[in-house]
Image (tube, rainbow, N blue to C red):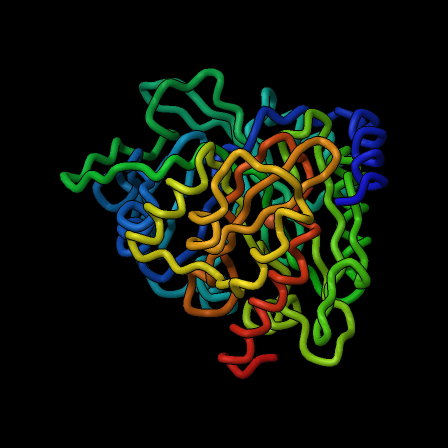
Length: 378
Ligand code: FE2
């Protein structure tokens, strides 16, 4: 990210009107075809720990959910138990994908009121759910595509996750891989829709724009996209929004929109304090990452200056490096983790830098183009 963009970040974020104080991401829920096997994958390959379960045994007749956690990252994997209904329709249209980006708030009723009065479309009205561990207040609004935000107020709850969920303690246990929290979550939206959704986050949720990248920043010889990063007042929630841009060949965002059948979550960036250890563990367990040519490392230190890490292990793993005027960051991207070329993960380690790796965009998008080419979708 350029100095100009970083300056912009400092200037704009404190101006975000905080009528919607958000404590953090509460959970991310994916609707998937087979939650039992998806849960196994996220445990075995990603080192998520079992937390809670909802299904026939806990009185849920129509759906099953597995709740997994690593650091502050909570994943909920949900599948339908019956034909028909909204979960099947979601999977039919989008394949497996993120349905809910849940936000942890002090007051879920007020969050609903403040956002709906500013134009948010209701997903569901505030409701209180309780069991012997207390109560949780939930409310929900729609965002891009069929994705929703659920506001979660859990200050009066002590159970493993939420009423309706039992503790989930399989005999199968894995070691975590050092993932700490969600750094940012990126949405892909259709042609000319980026500004509309950035305005939604500004007006309806009180977010401010941190940075923007146009197709000159994010293009290769063949493909392009545009992106703006929206952040809430305390900076804990960062939602970059991408839209496709014209290029000689098909933008990766367009490929996503084609296969997801609309707007949706493109990637979840998860933070680690030691990217070499985390990525080594993930690779050993079978997670596949995008590959950058070795030539990337020939002059990378000329570009980013001195770093604490040895270059050799970063090169071996394919970790990318970028610097802004506050520090540097290390990042790497997985291949799509679903059958359709839609959602993927980013692993990020920040060493001061608050930006998003602009200096890596070209190398990264060329790597994505190589994958698109293999899929015949470039
Ligand atoms: Fe990212």
